[in-house]
Length: 158
Image (cartoon, rainbow, N blue to C red; front, side, top):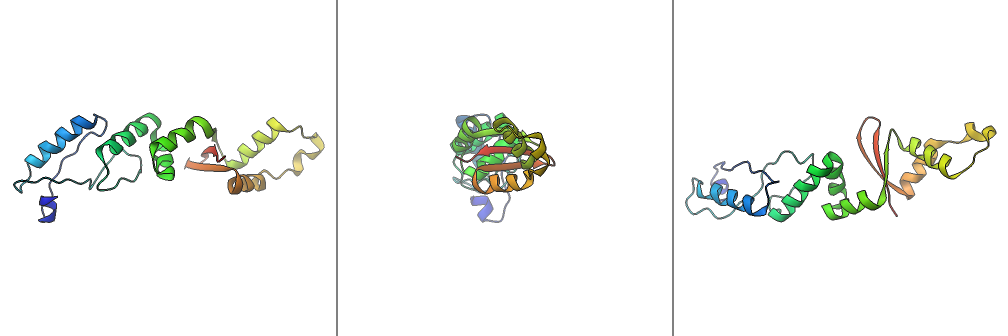
């Protein structure tokens, strides 16, 4: 921060998956190489590989490592869930306990659960509006994470 506060860009790319102690050692090395003598503070001003996950400038190293490991394990879906819930632990709970699957659309999900749980007479099949059912599910019962065209991950919200 000393260099930054004096208008000098100084920093280092540090691998967030190498563990807390290794990151602290890399930070100490970066601070020692600062153009401002006696630099003691650091901040995260840039990051990559976090799949769009928000990081605070002053995020703890432990939190950064936890988030990096979760994203390494679950990719962009893990990042989106962590952004939504605020922490990897809640995101992990959603994945382990509430994940319904990946679908092309919420309407496809509505159709699948309807067909799995209800016997619909063939004469009524064409009267079911799965798009409306999908809208109701989104309002009341599910969380959706859309990662691309026809790539919707669905989680039960209760």
